[in-house]
Length: 91
Image 1 (cartoon, rainbow, N blue to C red):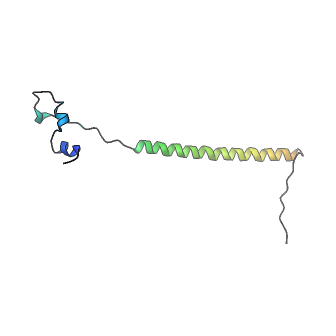
Image 2: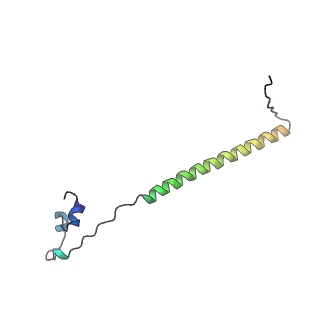
């Protein structure tokens, strides 16, 4: 029994807890309540939600910038200020 949890499961009271028990207390009737181990499920899910949200925002932002750029090129080329052509090389 090297771990304090093993001591408590076996019914032994560690010395530091034994000193906190008031004198005259029946040690056989003492119940030691342990704190539950921490759950990491919540922080992991929160991190995943934040990461997915950031990726979604970046994708939407990229799409909006693309639409704005295409609209700007269309307006400028329609007004005669700029033109562009796509050409393929023929053999």
